Length: 162
Length: 254
Image (cartoon, rainbow over all chains, first blue to last red):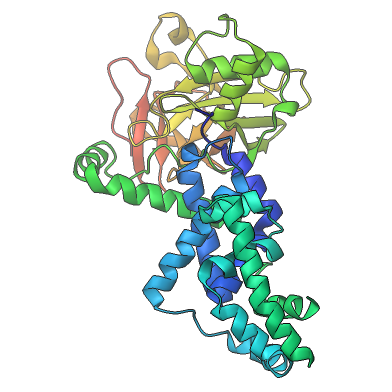
């Protein structure tokens, strides 16, 4: 049995250092910045409330990510589907659609685990072990998910180039 | 995979990365706590609160303790760290403890600096088993903590103040309680206490002092007459509670 519990200052330090990373990852998943902000704020509040459940042999950031992702999934369940983009970003989106629209659609159509593995790897730069903790799977499963996702996307990239 | 990077970057163009607010997180954590308290024990707790403090309902032990700035262990001299660790653990500082034990207890206590006021620094820490330990120190002193005390029921509706005032007079050594005079009004107040005053003869409240960051301090314009009690006031200047120190009880505040 490992030691349990995270100190509030540790959670606060994580928040102050990595807020941008959390909110970017949540935005990618929810497709809505305001909703992502709500989820991240609520998730850190929850992590404070439940900090004694954290096991110190685990990774604190991965543990908080698991709370963020659960909160995000709950939000998606309530709303039924990812929210529409903020109109202020639509211009950027349109530009992307011309060049990388198909790739984007393909990325967003990936199974949730593959998509989240890519998001956590890209936005948060988490290790496979951390991603595994955040998603509740083994590191080997993370590697397999990322390989599968990259395989699908690589095919699409080749298609874009030709 | 630069195209993939471009797509991933494009997904988060509206991410509100500049809108971080730890205070908002703390407020949400408190709301969550209050909602949880509201389930099983709400009725009993509400009755107790209403009976004890008709002026307002105070939250539970979370309030105040998460505010302030975390104090890193490296900032705390070893002797102070040991004393605080012992007190939050509920044992005498004379009881020896290993550095690891002290460090573990210190970490669990999540010591926070609440305020610096007129050259004095105010700290609060979570006591094991509930309640709060508070400490006050002089800025620049060798020791971080000049005084320290713990209360298992602070902050709560039953005890919204943890007073650390300095008193003088025969009342301290068993004389007439009504002869207590105050040299420095100082202490810690729960969320919801907006100001603190002194109850004197005829039920008058004088030297009303604002509470900021859960701390109150007044050195000047203190009454020369005996003080009967300390009064906690809400934002509308209504009396929350009176900590009576006069023998035979205190008159109602006017």
